[in-house]
Image 1 (spheres, one colour):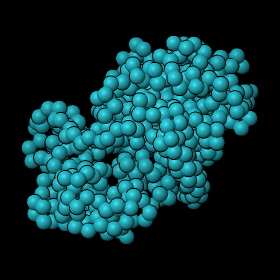
Image 2: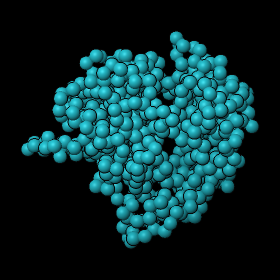
Image 3: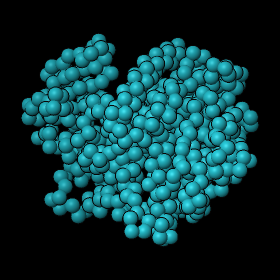
Image 4: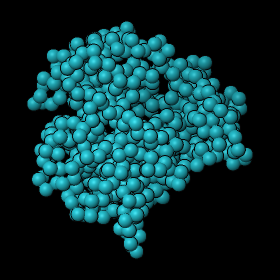
Length: 573
């Protein structure tokens, strides 16, 4: 539906004050991302935003301090994605560090309990639970919070999802995205919100003199978990999140990370010493997410909680096997979705808001299908599957969007225009989830497309790959590749550097069934560069002369490092 355009990322200002401390190329890259001075690139923990600025913390901290002092039974109610799993592990580990002795956790099974703190999940809790703390969920759990309080439990909601019109009647709610909350960073992931709760709790206990001569616990030991959840949840890496992620990455690279993340890194055949955020996003995070998609996320949380290296490796192997199953299932579902699009099964060139449904699809994987189709079509996509084998009359959908189209607000618009059509929804600007009745699917598809037609224009429907311009000759070096790798942390809203150059294809060959390996000649100095492009081989040779958008990466095959171009897009020059 959309061809890709390459555009150069504009500079947002002029670099100032770097002198000779940073290569001019990196200064240019930073300036295109809003970083103009050395101060703006100093990701020190001392520059982290103060917890005192976040609303709801005073009430939450008071409840937690009382629970610790009275030796109450605390249950962490997590979520079944990577953010939720890491946030659960941060909560359990952190509260134990701060003196809580009776801390357990629950994670909903998406096929049994649904999403968040539902009445069904509350019903599974033992009677002795006195305090429930949600992580990465709860702001929409009106019925679940009511069910918990009716059983005499107190409830603290910690979440980062956008609130609806009705908030749950919790004893405390901590969410930087609540209306009226003055916390400067709205981009914290669920794990980041929980980390801030622990920071505030430690400060409160310090004022009370709780720690005494033994000294207060070091909460920085949790930052590897915070980094993983933040990167995997694709929240924008604003300055505050970059501080958190960079601190976590340093712990991991210095082999001070928890046993579970280290085992997952090794299971994905990445190097801990040279770990970067893309490794977390594309290799470690999916292994954890797979448990929540196909099995039970308790396996993922246990992997993050164990301090036994052998047990961690065992969990990592199990998670890797589940992830491979997820990949195979995803590939089959994406292939079916592409056939549906090609055959115009409810989708054609005029469709703005794409909806897809197949009765055989797995509800835990439809989000990945929506993501893949969104990338290909450059349209907002919602993929649906039956809610469960015992509930074929209801559907669960997962939505993914494009820049400029707020997917949760779009669902809210559909809900306002057609009351009762959507049973439940929630999410962010770029991703959301919902449920509805099977019989209402055609009506919903038409209503969603109607909103998309109103809100989207032709410019938004044009897929664009932004680059940092031309890579100067002579800079295709291992040193520059290393500098680029560690200049981040790169991620959502702070993207990895991508360059565009003109090359001649000196030689090429298929790599596996779908990939290409090439030797590219730079006509400016006749230098040859090793290059790869994944999922690009369709039986035809690449252009003899090409305009290529690429990342300068490091190939560490068999322990030997060399620069390599990772091609993102090629077109005849």
